[in-house]
Length: 172
Image 1: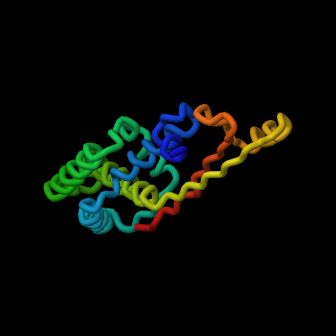
Image 2: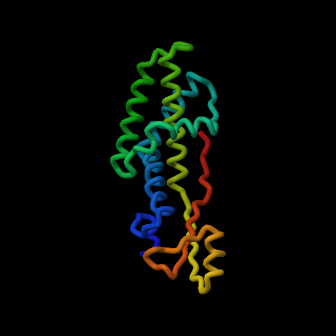
Image 3: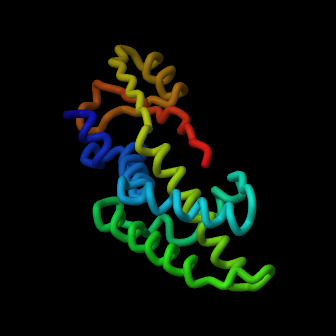
């Protein structure tokens, strides 16, 4: 019960409560219905623009606009599915003229979408590690605080640390 409270915000621990919505929001970009769309978008991008390697800058740009306002639930997943459909439709209609502003913007939007899909796929495989302690002295409490443990508000005798293992991004 304590772990569920930590993740859904009922514990009052600000440091933990935002993690689950962030993971769910990212996972919306990697729903099963999106695999086919992402493959098609990636193939379209490869055929028109050659090989593309995901960069840190690409990932940062993908998360700048609109990412944080996406609902972390089924409606967010449906929004991503509709976005994929719009991109695929637009890619079919695009003239793909070299250097045109519309082509550059479409390529940018496809890259953004593919980056979010990679991030979402990694979030679907996220691993969380919980560590619990029950300090007996103020010195032990101080040591735990230095190790980034927090005292639980719902159970003050228990201290907890939550760690998210590094996410592994697949390649396209």
